[in-house]
Image 1 (cartoon, rainbow, N blue to C red):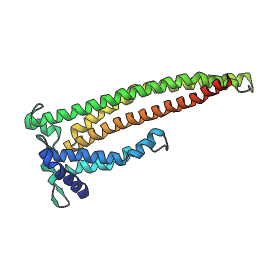
Image 2 (cartoon, rainbow, N blue to C red; image 1 turned 30 degrees about the vertical axis):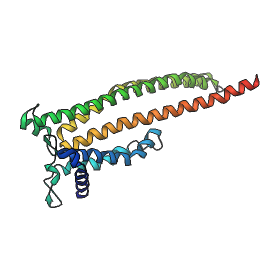
Image 3 (cartoon, one colour; image 1 turned 45 degrees about the horizontal axis):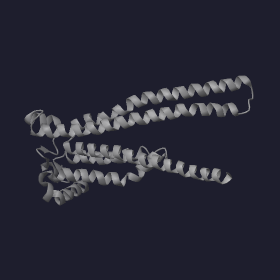
Image 4 (cartoon, rainbow, N blue to C red; image 1 turned 135 degrees about the vertical axis):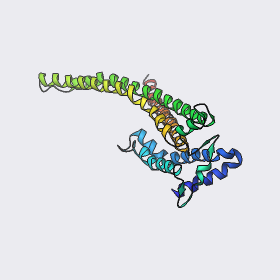
Length: 255
């Protein structure tokens, strides 16, 4: 933990001439960005589905960082010395303060309360963005599954029949499984995106510094996934266009 506090403190000192008392808060955001940059290759692998565990690794590897952040701004002493980070602020709110303490200092719209309201608003915007993208992705996946179902049925029908009863039963099972998969996708598309708003509850009970880490890493996750999906879709469109051009050339040469 002392290594972490030293790193954040040094980043804060570098930013202090520009950001004054809020330099340590900016250092936390910068530290979070550095962590996410280091995990970016794993996020790319997760989107491509390179390994079954790829999607869990970025989240699991962030948990120790979050717990260190939590304890660093919850402990009065670090390594037997007074914790210098607790004296730093984001505007009027100490980085080690919690929302309940801010309410006791000036109420919901007090100086500290407004800082937490701004944090909650930022988290809500990111969560809403994540929910909208999650619903769109789930809807697109369900539509793709529905479009692929007739093709699978035709392919199965083209296979030589061993017996009429077996073929009919196989087709029924295929149709049933496809319908169940579509229903599961529809339900998950309505529920999973709402879990993004759970970050609001976490931010309300952890120190302000940990809340800054949460909003930064969540915003990074949503933006990173949107960017990677955009790149993947663009690569697929370019591949389709490249496949169509040779086919057009072959038709023209035959004419």
